[in-house]
Length: 272
Image (cartoon, rainbow, N blue to C red; front, side, top):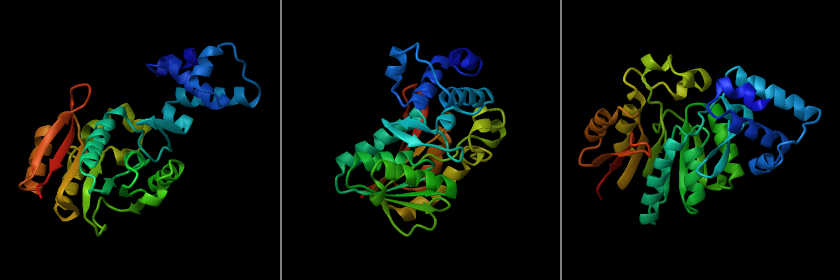
């Protein structure tokens, strides 16, 4: 029933149905696969039908589940935050590489934290990391705080409602950001804009409006020898590099590709 219902609405209807059943039955997906004849009872059946209807109506599966996995951790979600995506794991890998090779660098910022995926992951991987996470949406910060609590890093994370980093009076060794970078004129044609918060997607006329504003703040916020990591769109590399070079003179600026070979990450390193 689940697979058949979801097939017109998903590229992975079987997997989606398994995840819904796993949540309803409080069992692993492996258990679901090895018990294909399990029967739902009462409220379980009603919940499954309701969840399928929500997916049919166009609601994203992670919002129906109330969580999604990112870098091996489960993050609680609500429609107030973006769904974390595998592409952002490149940013995590580069951040961890920097932190592990610079054990004296333990002050970080996650700008536009959303569900807290970047901040919580980095704090979870680096036990003595102190990280400030900002977002202009109070609802997102509440979700991020819950995730920090659930993953036992709340004492080392500070959540601030802010426009980028402007009110934060500190310097950071590492600044990470996954900000809106989709140009406004193409956003309306994308399914993601119908399912996820537009404010977390809309990057203005060229898609780089918010990133441009953050890079302008970086010289006052980044410690000497620090690193900036910002996720970008696949066609924004040249312009993003130019903005970073102008905003942060005498820095090393490069673009890294994701696993699909698409430009994905702006990396800025400053000298000591």
